Length: 294
Length: 334
Image (tube, rainbow over all chains, first blue to last red):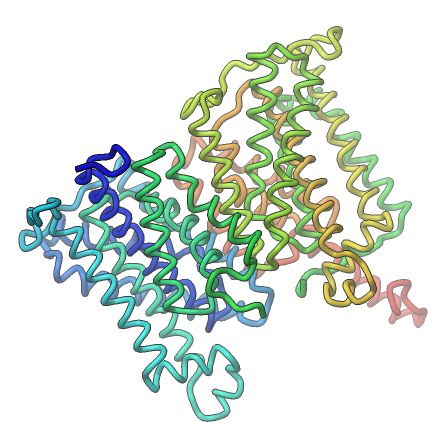
């Protein structure tokens, strides 16, 4: 059975790979959007945090025999703590000045993190084994489904929807949304906004680290994995607009799938298809698909 | 854009003397033992940073993708001179024109959003240019374009001699520098400044802000292209790192470190960074990126005015102080 002359197995395989990539785009753009909403900072270091998350898992396994499931919990905590340190020591000095400085500062942080990991681990990359429980593949009849990839898509969907629920449907989320609109007023109502801001950055960092651990068995763990991804994620954010959480999730997954299809039909363009879509969206709808004109 | 200091206007005569001294030093540099290829490379990056500063410092637009214009011109000039056999002056002009043309397209798309989005869009579009440089059949992939000959200027002056080429690069640099000063002091430059300080107000005064921004963008990208084209002639190759996003970051750092919105700042910043890289590259290896990152962080947290900005602020403070002491109104007081 073929679709446009492509064997259906290859087609569905690329579709799944696209969904996997899309899950990472969704998780990272979600974190970026939440951080930008409350801190007004575009976190260039987001890719570096994702990379550090993957390395925490790899180092944990390699040096301390820490298994994958423990890493899923430990890496976000470690990277979240790093996020707290960064927010308290550096970012909080920048809230009252032009947001471009936040981008530049986090760009510097990304260079530092990348340089340090390059020094200790080189650029060739490490491979992280798929955990035993998820090894192998399931034959669905029309395609062979690698269990781990299916897990990545499901797990990240659950995390993304959980984040959406937390922000849109709970009291904590209401404080967060109110803080995005008017921090001074929320503070006047007796909510400790600086602490909330700090934990928001930590949570965004933790989310990036979680994506990094999920990604570790699918791709090579290298110091450059973050910066290669972050630029695509920026394009995803521009396409979706940072206004809506469900919008970020949908845009991330959708673009991953489109990228997967491009790999099937015209592989040379798969690196740039997201950027081309960004250009088209900007011409037609400058605020992004789900964004609001401010 | 808040947080940016308007460039102060120091006494014109004093600054003219200062510029002539700097020019004399630059002319004398290769004769007192400074390696001419290093000087040419630094001058090319200084040109690049000045072009970038026209946009960031004088218009208030942060482009995070300027490497695309440096890189595309570097590749275009390299290909035209090496493979198509064009003369160096035509190759450089064509490279500049191609960078400006790409700048026009990128600018048309990017100016649809402002501030932080503008930065992200230019970064993403520049990444697209990078992938074209990586994958296109004529760019040499990972190797880049090697062995670009310097050729003969106008078919007469052989450029193989480093000293000859140095003075040509210096002449081009001085021309670019004066051109940027001219732009900034022109009525057009004043409108750019108005846009930087208060865009809604510039709109309400009836200026077509988008067109001014676009023209500034194209001018800046064209000059960045000129820098890239000259760099290819000087070093004899165009490489992927010219078009990579780290290069876009470096030019921001050069401008920020030297002092954005000042004329001399980007030049000083470029010489500092290129000098540092030259000095450190075989001593610290891959730590160089860590050091660049640390400089970035320090600049943003504690040193936003840069060398020249801090110097001007200190001078202004002193002149205000002496003026207050002698009881005369300061020339700076308004």
